[in-house]
Image (cartoon, rainbow, N blue to C red; front, side):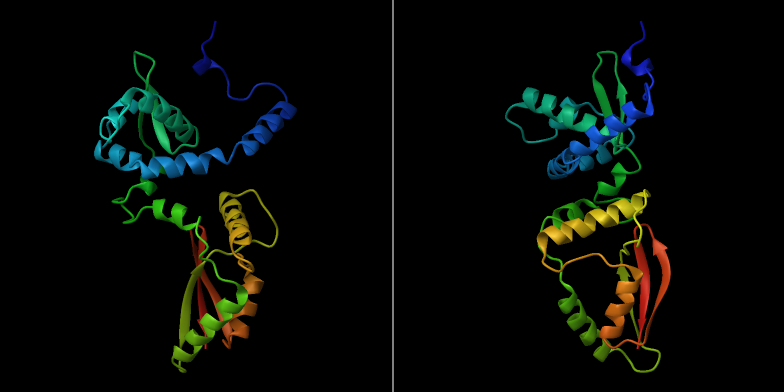
Amino acid sequence: MANMSQLPISIGSDKEGNFTYAMQLLSSSVLPFVLHSTIELDVFEILAKANDTQLSSSQIVSKMACNNPIDAANMLDRMLYVLATYSLLTCSINNNNNGLYGLSPVGKMFVSDNEDGASLGPLLALLQHKVSINTCQCVKLLKNCYKATPAENGKVIVVEAILPVKPDHIHSSVVISQFDLIMLAQTPGGKERSQHEFRSLATEAGFNGINFICRVSNFWVMEFHK
């Protein structure tokens, strides 16, 4: 009889796969909770200090201040399992059938001292706070920028996400649409904008034009010209 690791990931018809994906979406709120908790517990930092050595949940808990390490290790292992399914962590199984975890390339982005110089962890906390501004506030801010910009060859460089006009399935579009809904829920009038909406915003603030220079990951570098 085959063990679970030998079973194919996708079994059956497309209908079964669609149902499984729908069930994943229903429980998708779990990931932000787990990610936030493990960041607060410094799990990513602990794994980073282990370099390329994978650690068990018990070994990770031993580096924390904990009154009940056995229960804590069991709970943490279940959280690490979830992160591994999202490719935030690597995982191997030792001879005792215990999981050993390490940082994946994606997981390294949540370490404070990574090769890019900053962790994405604080952004997760930032998204939970009501810091977004509405269109009127954006225009007011940009008008102040316009006044401070030199008349000759003056420009303001803006780095922002741009919401595609038509929904698609690529990761960057999914991320931006989710950010848009976070703004909708937390700030009246807060939103992610399309290219057309950025042009309108720049024009309303007094700028003569806008150039979309390049895209870096989920963000566009734009120039607002005076």
